[in-house]
Amino acid sequence: MAARPLTLSGTLAVVAGLLVIASGSARAQAQAQDMTLRGVVLDTAGDPIRNADVSVVALKLLTRTDDSGRFVLAEVKTGPLQLSARRLGYEPRKLDIIVAIGDEPLRITLRPSVALLEGVNVTAGEMRRREQIEEFYRRSTRGLGTYITREQVEQRVSGFPSDLLRTVPGIRFVRTARGGRGARFPTTSLSRRDCLPMIWIDGQKAPGLEIDEVTLTDIEGIEIYNGPSTTPLQFSQAQSSNNCGTIVIWSRPPTPRRP
Image (cartoon, rainbow, N blue to C red; front, side, top):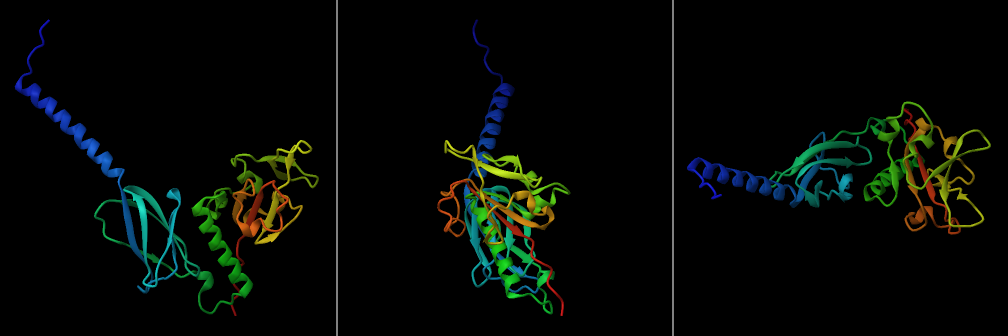
């Protein structure tokens, strides 16, 4: 049976269809393009904030602002993403943005932290704690381990710290002698079924501590490392014989005291 010749309307329909496909393909290619995201971080007075951390956690991208408060993030995909900006002394901020080619540089404003306003006493130890928490959020962006942030903790109105770890691969839980639950990592040793991880609290080792002996509402963040190859040096030196994983817990900073 001979093929029927296309009419003018049919030819136009085919051409239109091809244009739609080409247009959709062009849009897909544009969305897949990498670009450089630029911006500046300012305080509420319009002054630049230096050394602020700007990150895209989903892409494991992290940079810091320069003396002019400016930042550059390379290899950012066009399309929607969540940007995070943090600086000690300011309230952290998250922005949901849509990145497009030709965008103007971003302007991000951070408000001073109420807890650290002038006239509030903060001890050197408390300030060091806050600096360590900022380092925790930097590591969580790089993603060498598994991280649970304060935002995730607050999503649980009740329960125990072990509830937060239930989705972490390679961890099992046992009932402890004190009635709570303890986290255990797998081991290749024939003499032991599982291993007791080394737990750190605010930068200090806590041998024998079980995860559920920490109050859930006191937690700012948790880091979980399944073995020595991924554990940061500051949490692995002096425990080189422990190959059972590491859990690092950061407690919420205390409320500064007013004079």
